[in-house]
Image (tube, rainbow, N blue to C red; front, side, top):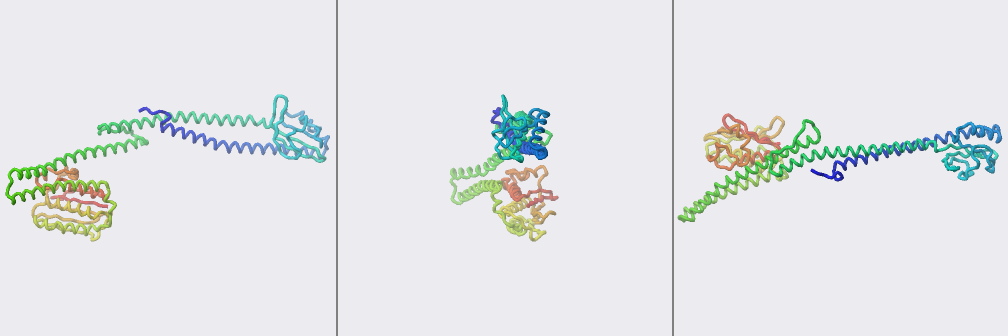
Length: 453
């Protein structure tokens, strides 16, 4: 997979971090520079004021001539350019010092000034303190600012080097991050392309670590597993629909064709028409069940949840199926261990789920058998609706299969009516209510336990 470097999200992210790093250095350097400037300048002014105070005391003790002699001695002994000194009379005529004339940039008023002194071929930046002495004499004491310029220059050069190093490391890191990120994205893209191309078995390689890409790969592999399961489920459902619809449609066509050819008497014709209506009803029932399952899978019915008394609901469903049980000679009983088991749910879907479990139990229970419906709570307080029978039960190998749509076991195929959607709907209703359907052995028979939440 080719991606231009400048369009890479990883590279852009790395540049963003570099920019943030440069900004952080700038935010760190500016206060440091400001503190340096103010602290050093205050220190310089303090040194100059101390010198000025000593010179003023000497002026008071020795007078102008004594101070002038002292200043000339200091000028001869000090390092060239170390300190600027100038003593003038009230007319600003120089009396002593290393300046030939009073700087025009410094006004007559006393204070602290920054001036630029120009001499032959060079200029110096000067920080000076102007002090007025008794009798109108003026004293100027200053220090050359260019001596600290070297330190400031080195500071800015160091800061610039830090910026350059950060930029270089950031760019290199951007390339490395881009390479690592795009390598993982390329693996994901190839796997997704393989799935799109029809290879549902392709999976992402997963390392032993817990890196972000390993976690993402595991998540995507689970998604691929779900996709593969759904695709196979759709194929199986399609095949099952075609198989289960073929029988009633073939019977319907056979009835109508026979009516068209033989043209029997009216009584026999009406009988065949009634059979054809039953075949159509079977087809409509299949589609209604599929539509109901699709509606449950989408979670639309969850918006209509309301408080439901599971004990009363189960009792009502038992009373509805009691005539069918009596016709088969089966004892249908309702046992409520807790009289008020309430949950939030869809009463219509819950009633249909319990009805499907009772209907299955009545189909497979022997004549003079027993079917019991129990409502209780588990140890943590969740509602449980159980339907027990003493029929043949379900083999362990088929317990996970009977909840699949259109699946019918070998024992029931061709023996009992149905298309294999009853337990699928019960399982879907349990999932909608954050529960599950458990199928357990009753020795003999089956216990279908609907755990809700």
